[in-house]
Image (cartoon, rainbow, N blue to C red; front, side, top):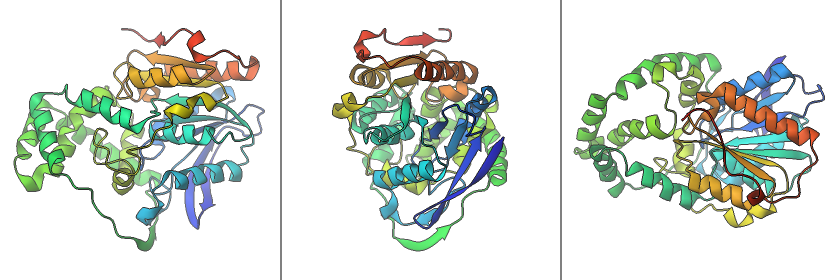
Amino acid sequence: MTREGFVRFRGMRTWYRVVGDLDSGRTPLLLVHGGPGIPSDPFEPLEALAEAGRPVVRYDQVGCGRSDRPRDPALWTVDTFLDELRTVRRELGLDRVNLLGWSWGGMLALAYALEQPAGLQSLVLASAPASAPLWVAETRRLRDQLPPHVVAAMRRFEDHHRPRRRRRRARVSRGVPTWRGQAIAAASRPLFALLATAPAVRAAAAASRIPPLRRTSYELVGIEFTTRHLIRRPAMRTPLCFFRSFAGMNRQVYEAMWGPSEFLGTGLLRHWDVSERLPEIGIPTLITSGRHDEATPVQMQLLRDRIPDSEWVLFEDSAHAALAEEPECYRAVLEGFLGRVEQVPRSNGRAHDLPSPQRVGSR
């Protein structure tokens, strides 16, 4: 059973998809995607949980994917997306729910969990930071381990970067329909495979010496970081749903809230930090990350140490997208956790009473 539709949010439309029966008696899993400004398509492998009776719900945050796209930069705040999350949950009748947030979605899930909402049964933080400054410091450390010509090209752009100013416009555009996103993804996958080759990266790095080409060069050489720390599968073996998410991306949202890259935080989130409030989270929490993740062990250990009743699973063969890189294993870990939440009384133990971290996959 699958249904899709829109909920009304501040006069706009937020797209959602429900896989499974919300009346099955099993607590639904609500998925909050990353970005900001990158839609929910990478969650597609998790929909298979519904085959065992677990309803799965995902939605595209307003501004990206199939949801409406307003042109008002003032909307791109944490409060907007928290309000949207509350609206989706209310309109779909998700009285009891498990919440999974991936990357930026994990930041949003943390902020929501700290509100202590009724009916929230558990929290899954998939490669999610609790501190934007720590994230930038760690990703910049990883960036500096890239080949010297890539780092040099990136620094040429960063040394001269000035955040773009966006003017408010009243127009609201429709989102990107699934069929169009699929067509763009199918065309972009072989192109990405070509751009990820060493000669292409070197050519892009050389182009950074020409000032008008620095931004384009920055984005192209960034593929080197993507293939090491975002998703390590070869492009032609990467699920199309992953490329479809980039087809539905809204770069304006990403840059307004975060910045031009993962390691150049210039947006509104650059000072976001809830690390001191993590002990307030009073529900069972699963933390997941990949061995090669931009969400480094330093960041995940912070979550693990400070959130009571939490556990951390490290996927040895993954980077930032374990749910797509090791989908079967990830689903097994996730359903195991959710099953324990539903069947076993919650522990009063602290996170540091548990072994850290659990490791799955080969090494």
